[in-house]
Image (cartoon, rainbow, N blue to C red; front, side):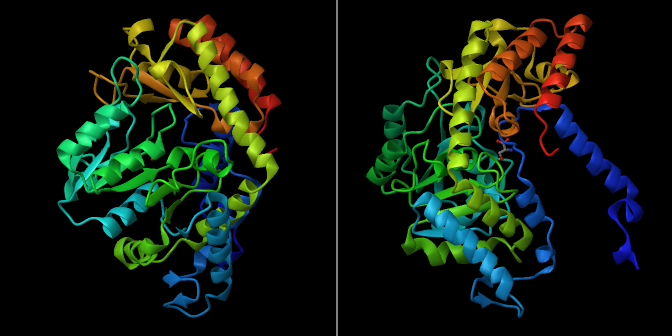
Length: 416
Ligand code: DSN
């Protein structure tokens, strides 16, 4: 019976691709700011028999029988997140950060209402109202930008813009803004114009859980996040909201936006949230930020320009236009990829190239910090990146960098 066969027996090509992907992760430096390596415990939970169970509804109130054990798991995930974020209500069912945002929009807005959010090319996210995403198609969208000189959000300008466009919701949070948001100020701006405040903390969920990044929970009616980035709890999303919106949010997620919850992923969240409650996780989160600041300083010493001149958190945005005007983000990503350093091309404020080409790269430290990299290693990695950007076609540089990357990967294994 097929049940007796291993993955490599029943689907050898899939098995081989999984093994190769594991090897790729072990043998390269993952610096995509939104990625991380989960623990074996989270992998075990996500690969469990909970994938077999339908559980439409919520703990204690399901549409199917046999939900007693998945109820336990989901309630644990909810309780842990409630504690971690000092929340009134948490929904752990969103399949992703985008689904979480969808849940909030469905709960708080009517089609045609106005969203005011950070533009994608200034660090925002597709689900904050981009025209190619449902959010930009269902809602009227106005966008704010960072100050072109400083790279920071100008909150006075945002306040004036909010008065002007009269939004129904203001979205804070980003995919590529290297500075902390002033959640309190955005909350005040939103409330002055009678709008809701949605804080999308996808990137910084782990930093907030660890208490080393300001929390928006007091200053936003709705907070959304993803669970696989800095918090290392496996792929998925979550919504935190004031108690008075709990029923609206829960019914917006199910039955509004989703069907059966992914209970194996919710088990991953419950496991990852337990890890996030430890002192070890707090030390990890502190190291993520300290590593990012060290990397940023070394980049600048190596002649690279960073949007806003640095970082407050786990990521930075290298603007190649000053230092390497001919080198596109796409070419930089590719040259680094060839030597085993994995980053993503990224638009920069005032971008003139297409999003598939770009003039920048986004670089993050969560995954390398999980491997055990500290400040010294970050400086080594910064130097390697600068060397490759300076001489992307020089084979001697490529060989030297590749061999240092190999040594670092061997010294800091992920799962072995
Ligand atoms: N794709 C994620 C990122 O890289 O930031 C956001 O969803």
